[in-house]
Length: 136
Ligand SMILES: [Cu+2]
Image 1: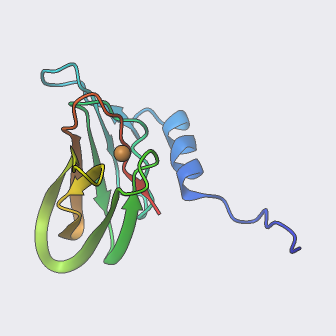
Image 2 (image 1 turned 90 degrees about the vertical axis):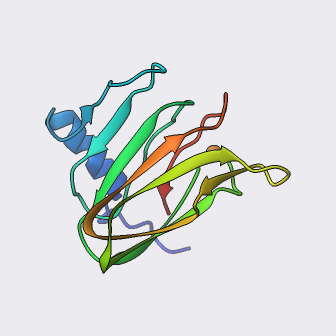
């Protein structure tokens, strides 16, 4: 059994530490109705994790560089999505988290394309169901 590497620090851990050490790194955006908050992150690589999102909450993330990024919901294995970041694509995209019977739940649309430095905003529109948007 190979020794476990200790040199690799998960990007999500770095992001959390960044949030803890710099209030400006992660700002809560409590605007709007429905009691929903939002979390906006600055460009910090292509790894992200919204944390639990209740109905009405949103999460926004900026993708600095061209890449194809897969992501999922930590609570629903059937929820997967892809972000294609490429020059010439849209400035931003919105992805809705929805019920998708009889398959369970889904990101809609499941694939979006944006330009480098563009952002994606996820919105939980699923009544009473908690979701996350978490990079693979
Ligand atoms: Cu989910």
